[in-house]
Image (cartoon, rainbow, N blue to C red; front, side):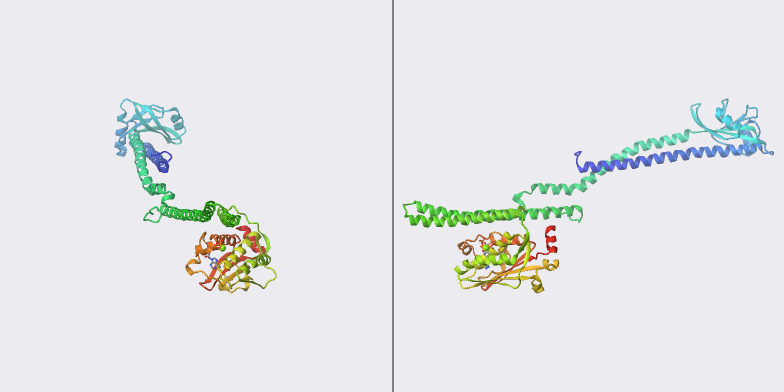
Amino acid sequence: MHFRSIRFKLTLWYVLLLGILLFSFSSFLYFTLSKSLYRDVDNKLSSLAKLIASESVSPLSKFGFGNIDQALETSMNLKPIGKFIQVFDESGKIGGKSDNLKNLQLPISLNALKNASKGLVTFETNRSFENTPLRIITHPVLENNHVTKIIQIASSLEEVEEALNTLFIILVIAVPLALMVASLGGQFLAHKALKPVDHITQTARMITSQNLNQRILPPKVQDEISRLTETFNEMISRLDQSFRQIKQFSSDASHELKTPLTILKGEIEVMLRKDRTPQEYQQTLKSNLEEINRMSQIIEDLLILSKTDTGEIRLNKEDISLTGILNEVVAQMERLAKSQRLHLSTSNHHQDIRIFGDALRIRELFINLIENGIKYTEEGGSIHIALEKENELSVENQPDRIKREKGNFAKIVVSDTGIGIAKEDREKIFDRFFRVDKARSREQGGSGLGLSICKWIVEAHQGEIKVESDLGKGSSFIVILPLSSPHNIELKSAF
Ligand SMILES: Nc1ncnc2c1ncn2[C@@H]1O[C@H](COP(=O)(O)OP(=O)(O)OP(=O)(O)O)[C@@H](O)[C@H]1O
Ligand SMILES: [Mg+2]
């Protein structure tokens, strides 16, 4: 097991906590038991001493000095087993003692003597008596406030100490043994709990950009691990989608750039085959320039889009007049529309609609939408641009998100009487490089990036763009942008 592994740490914590718990419990058990056993010995000594003391002063008692065993048996019918008894008379001499003392004598300390002379009882432990640990009570007998006898009773502590020693040995062996078993159990539990994590690690390690369609198998039970697996799988899905998009994007981009390059190459090769007239050279160079312009436009658009992806483009937002920009763009596009025999018109019921935005980008948005209208409308058709305020819209026309925010919004509708867009293509037209009819779009110099840029511009202004279309009859591009109000400015800076 690796020392830095969670498994090791979990087991260590588990064993450490259990160790502290077992140690505290064992100490508590040992000390309480030892206290209770010693107290029990003292209580027994004390009650026996009191009994003998009261008997010895009773007038009817036959208790006297000499053989204490006999005296106790005849006067009290008492046969104390395992107790050494010794009685001092008034002169301080041993007046009597139990048989089991033989010719020995119970030790009496100076302290016990002093206490006895004051009428106080003393408990002492003595370990110097015949290698036997003894608990001794020294109990004075008082008659008329005068110490007449001192009774000493001793009990061996051998049994108590033996019991405590056995308990100590059991605990010293059992606690480490329990900890060892616990550590094995802990390791097993940690291993079992962390096994799914190992599984996730192994699968995650196998997933590269080449097999992002692989997923981690979620566990059957709903727990933390299943949530982790779900999160991982969601992340892999997002990565998978991004990778696909990137792959698609780069293949589309290279294809887009390859076409004008092939045309350029072909034209130049044909020209170089033999000598040409200056007019022929001029014509070819003109066509070459068209292709070069086309490539620079694609590269410029791609650059903008890649910068929007990395968030490198900073918008220069300020209070701008949407009406002003629209009028400028329309005036500029009028010539192009006329050349295609198209009618370009606007309707604007407001003097001035202002938004908080980037003038350059908004211009680009208008140009792209009007240019599309011109490109995809047959000769004789018309393009109309309407500018309105949101409070004039019917509720059903408002996009959901904007309805929720309840602000004031500008609505720009660019409609044409052109070829229209099929239902299945309406969502896709905002994707990069998507064109309904590649040949037609290319003929008109399109690369399918215009609407992607429009979408980005609108969203960077916290707006929305959508399309409504009738195939063969025409299309309407609807853009909703927040108006310039203190509320909206605040909203934007929060984004
Ligand atoms: N007004 C419209 N009417 C019909 N189809 C449209 C209209 N606007 C866009 N489309 C379709 O959506 C596609 C994508 O439009 P987009 O503006 O992104 O690209 P493009 O016009 O082909 O090229 P670019 O704008 O990059 O020069 C177009 O190729 C076209 O098929
Ligand atoms: Mg376009």
